[in-house]
Amino acid sequence: MKKIIFLTSAVLLLLSFQLKAQDVKKEAENVKTKMEVFSSKTGVITKFIDSKLPNLKALYTNAETRIRKVKSGNAETYFYQIEKESKYNSSTASIEYSDLLEVIKAVKTLKAEVDADITSNPDYMENKFTTVDGLQVGYYVSNGKATWYIRLEKYGSDNTLFVADGETIDTAFTEAKNKIDELKTK
Image 1 (cartoon, rainbow, N blue to C red):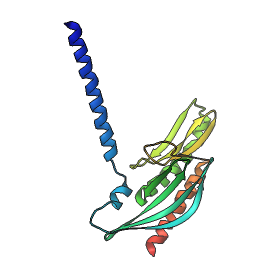
Image 2: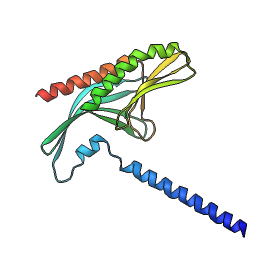
Image 3: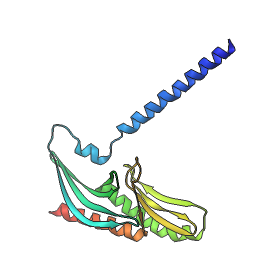
Image 4: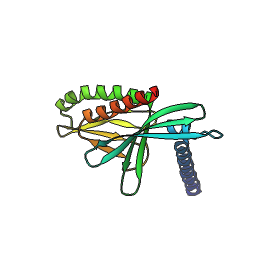
């Protein structure tokens, strides 16, 4: 009798974990980025206007970059987009203008900290900034060397760009901000 109660309890416990895991997955699927929220309004006409920027030079590949102006009804906003092509798919980060300003500030802070982090000679250290939409910009220190990266999307694989240094990232993001400022005045 005790075995039956124990087995029944174990089965119910496992089922409850499985149901909880499905709830978490559904919650993750429902989270929308700022680009998705702004561009998926129903009942209004949405227009996308792209302005190409120079490619972002990464260590193993180059990523295409552009400014995307999105007009949805009477509202409009600007996004800096970075797209990395891989063998089977592509990853795209869409960074809304106000988030872009925060990322630029964060990159300047990270650049100021990187030398001290290298000097501290950790076995491993990671220093990064993450936006609301899941874009990550930062570096990790290992074997006395810093490796800079941009993780384009929160979910999925093969969505990370490794970049030579923080200056490359800073320059690309600042050029994007300047282009958006120029487009806003037209």
